[in-house]
Length: 316
Image (cartoon, rainbow, N blue to C red; front, side, top):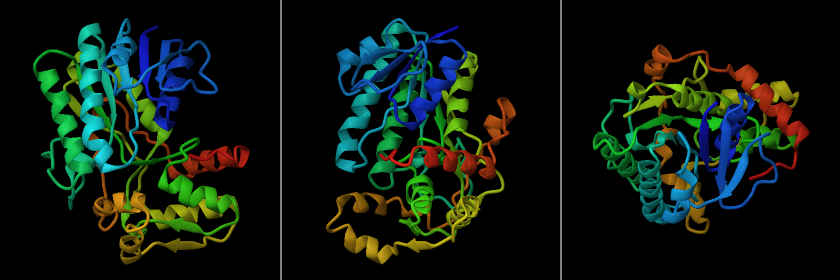
């Protein structure tokens, strides 16, 4: 039984906390506002990664901190909030001696034409990719200096039960269940790896349990094979639901026009490189060290559909 703090209680934080609580770990959930429900035995503590004092309290007295925080998807917000949050979390873990497991994404690699590997250099491209590179450098320097032991667990675009902000979930599964056409905001016909949220949580827990030699580096979460396109996955979901696979796609030119009126669409434009070419993730390093049996799309979409049939109103 370990003492663990989970910072952030979105889809990944909830799945990770549930997995840790189920095996009896002493669990602290840290979020700005108390969730409506917590895993059995978990305690809640108010906290904000943007505030140094509350982050120190969140990290105190635990052996591991799992960072699953999310920050509003605006570059101007990220510019200040992500470096500040990572700095505060690193300071909190330094003070307490806790190891840090960071639920990360893949933005820091920038545009690539080959499968993403953990040893690729960091990018200076754009805003959000550049900011994630800077955040990566913060934890790398802290680890190299011996201040704190850090491991980054990096996932592709994710989907799954109770993951309402996922492109595949929100714009595909939910709409199909409502009898509507899937409404895809990105080009849907390139092979694209997706991470199933429970697999992401499983990978994070694998690092919680790992010895110190697994720290000071990044690990890619295994994804279901074979890789599928977004269109193919929506078609698979439609077949499982029993509805026609009606799909509409937002063209890039229209996205650029809409971005003039809807800032959130503008925020996605610099990330089109994830969708205009094959977006593949090499997770062989993780597979050799831990496990590689990622959940199949058939099982993952089945569980996602079952969840939103039961919870049709569960929206972001």
